Image (cartoon, rainbow, N blue to C red; front, side, top):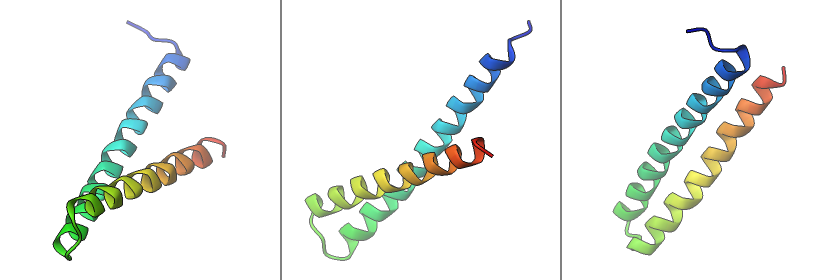
Length: 70
């Protein structure tokens, strides 16, 4: 079955967004674990992980946008 080019591009973009989300989740988990192991409380670890996730997801989406506009 042939799919239109725009549908394939949409699927690829969604897959790359999923990859970005998974990478951001991994980075956030590592940051939260490091914060918890260095004496921070649970709340500090969760806040650090959340901020790290938001930052890394923003960077990933920014890179995707820059690459796509080239």
